[in-house]
Image 1: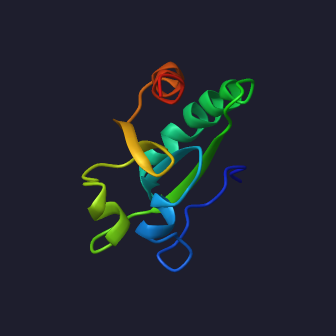
Image 2: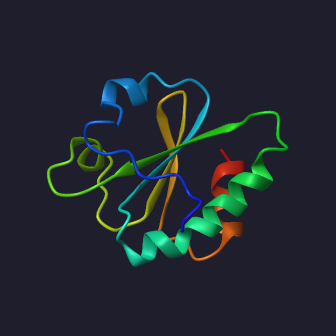
Image 3: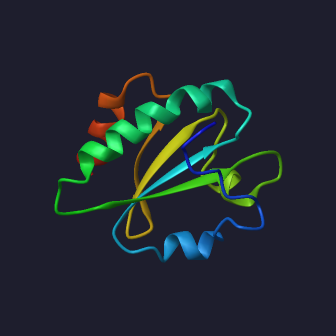
Length: 112
């Protein structure tokens, strides 16, 4: 049984306007529950975000279920899963596609 939070469905996911209105640092994770790459990335993402909690600027993490016709994923030009997009105050600062190491995610989140 997974201890990771599920992806937000199309009904639950925030709109583009809501994402652009988010204050502070946000990590958008686009993927699906059944994607092997997404599953493999979960411990890496958890490890990277756990090490980031010591900083003064916490990072909100939103897992967005992606698929054909999903407006938010299309706006961010998501082609492969998982795609991690880091935002500050709703503006994209960086992205990482199919992360292979927690350190890569830590650098992405910390360098923004």
